[in-house]
Each structure stands twice: as structure tokens, then as C-alpha cells.
Length: 293
Image (cartoon, rainbow, N blue to C red; front, side):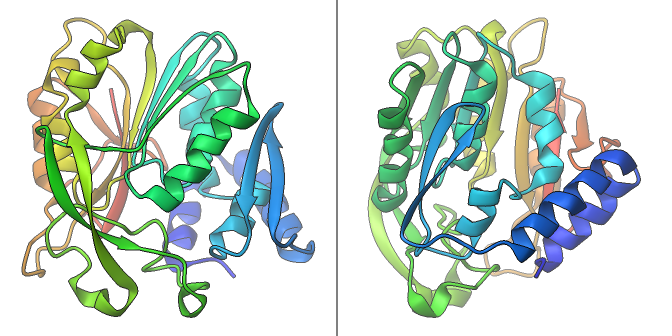
């Protein structure tokens, strides 16, 4: 079964890449009709080993068969090559970190940030399984300033195994983001750092960054504020793939137009990451993936 939002994204993708879309359908058929492994399973991206606990959530099946958000793969393929640096902010279980690691190779670097301990453990395991690669797994969140902050998290539960809307990727630092799902959440305190500080401390050259991916469930404005030095780099703009959320009806409104406006103030052009057309910030769905260059 395809989640509603994935179906919408795939239809949008189809018009921009019909051949690639046909291949996606074939991969999706393999996932649909093949038996799913159980327990701890391992898959590979071009020689990069990636270990999964299939009991956590149904999305692990998509990770195993490499069918998770396939419509974004051409973004990673376009911007990542051997020797490049990939930054994964909101890495969760590290699917895109593993994919990116196979693209940047042993001469490149992956810097990944995941504050939830249970998911960070999977991310850390990626580095352990691939000792010849450079994986910097950080058990912190990124934000506007260095602080200790309360985070609402969604942990694996049997009653939540097949939930695509509020799932193990829904944890958020945005106040009130999960107010509608209190029965599925718990609060923890996490460390937050500005990415600019991290980049300075680790001597990350913006010119070497192939792509920054941001997926932080409504906290994207704070993350971008904390990387203003990176955003204002003169010359080549560091490519950013960012999930932007919009819901003005909430008690704590989510306004994707503000995130897009912030990026444009730094000189970025913003495109819909699914069909690569200029983003229409007057017609944003709840969830949009934008490519900013």
C-alpha cells in the first residue's frame, strides 16, 4: 500500500521523468510481492552496509527494499560524488545518510545529526559497519542557538507499527507539533547546536558540501537560522534539500512561506524537489520537499 502523500509525490514526479517513474514502479512491485525479513536485517547501497531492525516500523520494509522516497534520489545523485560532504540534519534512522555515503565514497564525509537516542543508535551503527568511510554521527539536534531543549518524540510501539502519518520519523522540537498525538509521544531533553558552530569546529569547507538535507518536522526555520554563515557564503550557494511544512490552522502555525522567504533573502532559488519546477509558495501542501540552490 502506498501512503497518500507518497502517491501524490510520485504522480508529480511522473510528468518530469516518465522513464524513471516506470523504474520506480518496478522497484515498488518487488517490495510489494517479496517477503519481508524479520528481526535485524542488512541491506547495502553500493557496498555501504546498512543495518535495520524490521520490528520498529513498517517503513523499515521500504528502507530494506530501497523504495523510500525514490523521487528524491535524483537530487542526491546530482549533487553527491566522491570526495563531497553530505550533511544530514534530522537523520532519524540514517537511510539517506547510508545512501549518500555510497555516493561520496571513502574520500567523502557524512555529518549526520539525530537527537533521539533510539534512532541515533542505528545511525551510529552505520559508521561501525563501514569503518573505511567517514561517518560523523552526532547525538544532537541543530537549531538557532546552543541550548538544552524539550523535544516530543514518537517511539516504536506495536499500535503504531503501520501508522504513516505519526510515526518514528515524526519527532519534533517545534512547540505543539505533536499536540494531536499525545498518546503516541513522550518528552525528552536534547542538546541543540547551530550548524554554523559545528561547521567551524570541524573545519567544513562550504565549497566541499555537496548537499545539506533538512527534515526536522516544523523546526526548519530554526535550523536555517543557525546556519546563516553557510547560507550567506559568497559565490556558489550550498545546495539544500529541505522538507517544509505548512498548516496555518494549528495553534502554533506552520508557515512554509516564511522558510522559503528566508532562503530567498540569502539569494537562493527554490524548486519543488519532486518535479524540479519553481516552487509555488502560494499553493503549498502540508508537506513539501524543496531544493534550494
